[in-house]
Structures are given as structure tokens and as C-alpha cells.
Image (cartoon, rainbow, N blue to C red; front, side):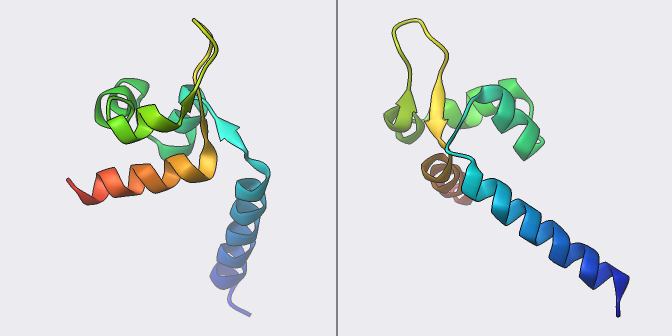
Length: 81
């Protein structure tokens, strides 16, 4: 048995489980999960109208985005670079 294959398999399973559990995320979590700085995410993603459409926030409250929807929008934006 190849240990690298086993390790990759376990990591994929864990990521899948985590993705299914994650309903929303905030800027801090985006930064951690994407390995991008908060300022980069703000500038490159959150200013985009598509991300603004899926942003959820109470008046002057913390901003949240639905995880799966925002991932798809972020992929679209990155494909345009």
C-alpha cells in the first residue's frame, strides 16, 4: 500500500466532510481556507457584484456568505484573471 495514496485519500475524505458541514463562512474563515490575505479577498472578490449579491448581513453586522455559492463565484472570478 502506498502511504501517499492513503494520506491523499484521507485528506480528500476529511475535506469533503468539512465542506458538507460548512454552511456559511466569514472573511476570517475565507482567508484561512483559501490561504489568501483578507485585504486580497476584499479587493479581488468581495468588491465583485456577484459576491455582493450573495452576502448576508444584518445592519452593521458581521458579513457572511453561503459557502458553496461563494466558492462557485470565486472560481468564476479566478477564471477571468
